[in-house]
Length: 215
Image 1 (cartoon, rainbow, N blue to C red):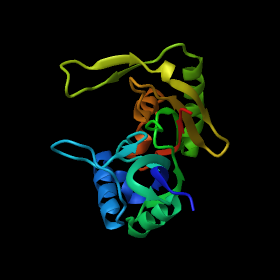
Image 2 (cartoon, helix red, strand yellow; image 1 turned 60 degrees about the horizontal axis):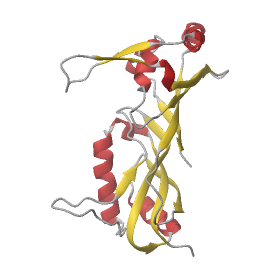
Image 3 (cartoon, rainbow, N blue to C red; image 1 turned 45 degrees about the vertical axis):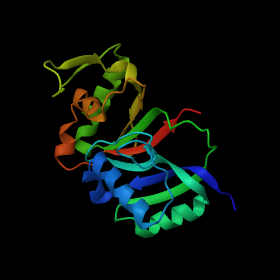
């Protein structure tokens, strides 16, 4: 039986749970940890927090198929046992997929790129495919980001963050976006630039299918 004091877990966030903010997901996970009696270490100081690190926050309304979170533990624990104990106390929509032991000195998860899927109605696919082709051929694409903490909106070039995009034969828009320490483009901003942002308002579900980490 392999035991470890640092564990990396992968989980899915589905269904109505996608309507939960990242902050609330963190609080929900902390409750799960307490209920499952997971020996998670805590930070030092006046307001100690569990040493739980997500690879990447997720926007409201987005499903995640393979999200990543690291736990630092106070005592060696079998990752498979930890996975079972968490699964037993998880709410609907929160699905634990796998767990692996990490070296105690392993750095926090650092995402390199992410992939998203969005179903496109048949009547919108031709225009969407043309918009994707035009964007990929363009050297730049400015987007405006509204920041409530700033006096002015932020305008930046989205194109360097777009690694690839396509419309599959099944009618899925699929995009791969670069993630940097300074940030990335939001998937909603990409959809808006392609003229398909309104599909989210009509009930289409955006899904983050993959988070690729630095080795």
